[in-house]
Amino acid sequence: MRQVLVAGNWKMNGSRESIRSLLDGVTGGMGDVKNAEVAVCAPAIYIPLVEELLTGSEVAWGGEDLSVHASGAYTGEIAASMLNDFHCKYVIIGHSERRTYHKESDELVAEKYEAAMQAGLIPIFCIGETLEEREQGITNDVVARQVDAVINKLGVAALAKGVVAYEPVWAIGTGKTATPEQAQEVHAFIRSRVAASDASVAEALQILYGGSMNAGNASDLLAQSDIDGGLIGGASLKVDDFLAIAKAAN
View 1 (tube, rainbow, N blue to C red):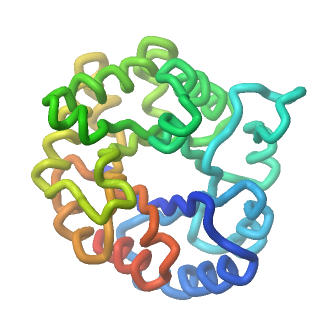
View 2: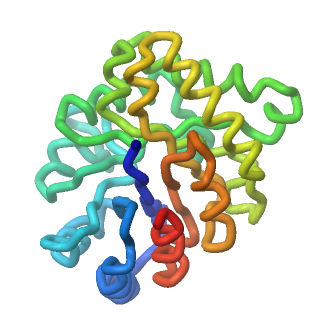
View 3: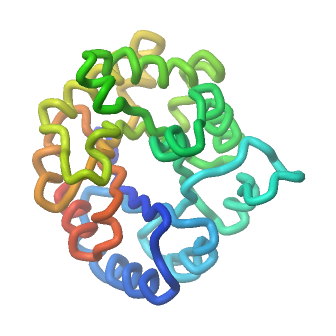
């Protein structure tokens, strides 16, 4: 049985005050969360505060991105070792906003996966199709290409050290969401794609849904056989909503 993971992606949101309030509420409600691991991925500048507030709690934390470089003249970048300094467990890589706004290629995302893995961080590896690609009927082609970029560079065993997050780009921040059946169909395809290289890696692989999972739809999505949790955007900034998603795994 795969462990359910509910991970918050705060994106470029938060303040000292709002983060203290949010994490006080989340940690205070963890007693009602029975069957899910909970994590939050924060803007880099707030990771020290997150570490301070979450150390000793049941909630893990991580970064929203990292550099492929270990150190050097890369102004504004965050190295894996810096995330390790603040005891991050996870780091998001390949988020659609990074792929779109910062033109990150499949090859660069695979390099970031390697940098995270070598540093002992667990990459939350985001993949997914745009609305145009879905309407063209090439969803499977897109996610296969993205998954294959990591397998081809690092070998399928590398996926055993990470988490995949399927995020249909057309359902991020739009209020739209894939139906549970649509999401399950793509999750099952992703697992089958990995299984073609290694069935045991595929069976153990956590595949999260990252397209506007919320308190209202979490139970139906998590009931699907190949959906192992969620990468949560806007709802992760609201205590009651985030906890409701985590409790949906009960």
